[in-house]
Amino acid sequence: MIIKFFDKLEDKIRKRLSRHPALYALIGSIGIILLWRGVWMIADSFEMSGLISAVLGVAILLLTGLFVSFFIGEQILISGIKEEKRIDEKTEEEIRKEEITLSEIHEDIEKIKSELGENKSTQSEQK
Image (cartoon, rainbow, N blue to C red):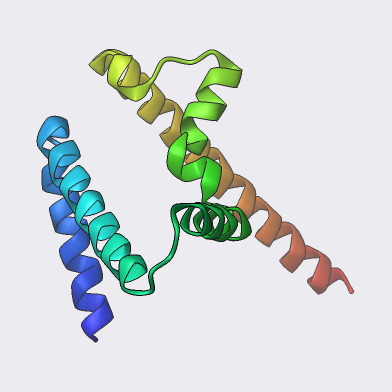
């Protein structure tokens, strides 16, 4: 119940902030910096050297698969490979066209699902 509440709250906040990318970036960067500061202070309390901290951090990020996705981002890699524009470089018209295309693809998938369901029921009736 608590998790569901925070999940809905996150969705509402993300929806509002997505309309204001600069503010969203500022708030996100403050959160990240405060998190890093807290981790830094914890590491200091264990008197970790810089080298140990760096090696341990890289190991954790590599083992969890977050190293590349956090520092570069999967979308940036994919868009670079496909030579696509970043989302902030696209025009509103381009984004709307992509939404329409995705909607059409979704409709096609739903049609295929229903046809497959009909074929399965027809086959089971014939047996």
